[in-house]
Image (cartoon, rainbow, N blue to C red; front, side, top):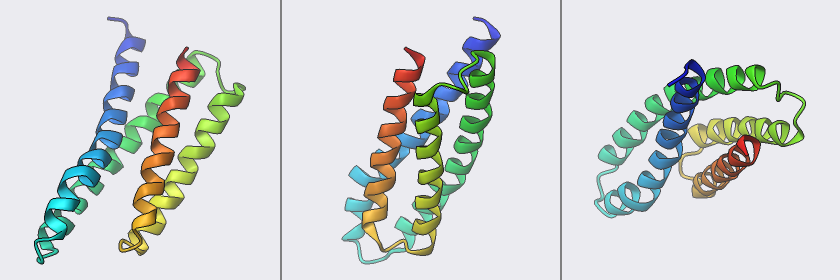
Length: 125
């Protein structure tokens, strides 16, 4: 394994945590705990995921920037769209933190995250 394979591996691991965690929350945790009446466990799960998400986003930014520099991809229009969507996800997450009861934000964050993953595949290809 080369150094850059390790950087790519870290990038993919962070992406899997971020997107996979969203899927787990949306498909399993929230539907199960929403009907329980006590919102405490759902809030605790979301808070814990939020902490992990901050770490994952940090890893994604650092490893993504390193790979874009190493591969001389900063002028790639697909990468620029991907970066724009990353900024959009950041804005949506900020809005979600202020309005956690707006479930449309959950869906928007997830859909934009999937678009980012797709663009990552396009950029890598």
